[in-house]
Length: 136
Image (tube, rainbow, N blue to C red; front, side, top):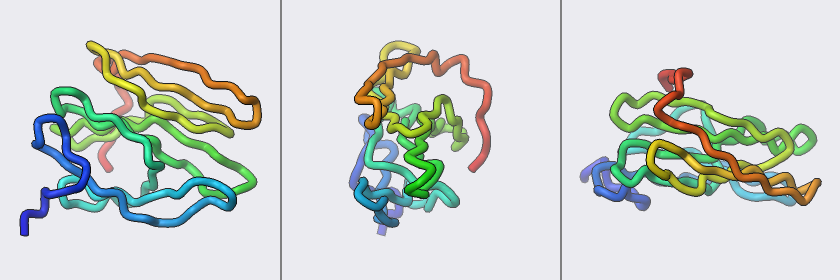
């Protein structure tokens, strides 16, 4: 069996991933482990929000930094460089949810939604200037 086959394929069908149900927040959404190109991403959990780079270079995900009902939600926009397999947390939402929206030229566009405040704010970051890349 080809270990690179996954339900969510990149635009060039070079990469793929699967969400694996891990749990759910009380009165809230589900969270998942991630299998990327057949390999489990350890020590990280994700919400069901993602966006592929149009050239299959990056995968943007909503990473959950806590599942504690009292503290959260705390989510981060995490970018995976699919060539180097490095990760970068590029923005964080305390008491909110981050959603990657699109890649546009050298920008990743995303929004932060704060349910308690009823507020949604859109942001963009130049992904070519990210310096905090780290191995899994």
